[in-house]
Image (tube, rainbow, N blue to C red; front, side, top):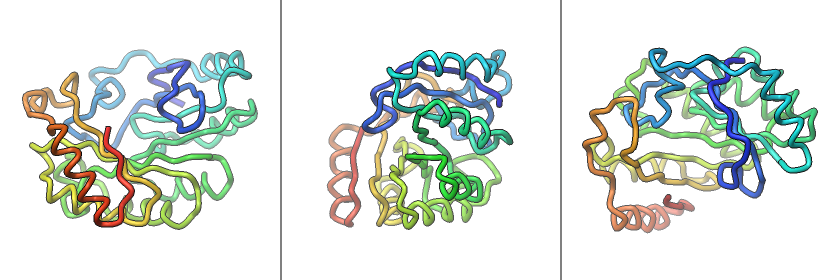
Length: 229
């Protein structure tokens, strides 16, 4: 388990739970707006944290924490992810997994085995534009299978998309809204130009608050429960 970071306390990342966050290193996408380059770009890697140290810290917080968010990077790339989750669950803590959906077989196995309580799935772009935006030779249909699985499996979940108008137009965001129709919720996250995997995007204008609200209204009109952040 290659752990790139640990946050001992969060009220925002696991709905309804007081949680810690474990950041796993390594990703198969290269989204230019990614705000965790230290988990994605090998040139930015720091020494990993020992899993035993993180589990020990979590054990010491039992009674104050209710859950753990496992995020990245991309957690499903880790061979020992299921074992790590099992050790967290053994502490009596729930687990939320954040994933880009490129390994639906891993996601389905974890859900079917009852390892997860909540899933956050990032949908980066319309399926037709996936490789272009993520700058990676991934299988967009694998992402679609993850989405379809969450739509029907019954686990609590949220679909998320980061919006940077220089990369995704309003119309393309509505394509994503149609794609996620039937899921529990779609959270549109406003790009914040603080740090990014590709510094060039820091010069791009984020969406206005008015545009965010217009998108929310348009998505709701399509029958999608949409929140903007």
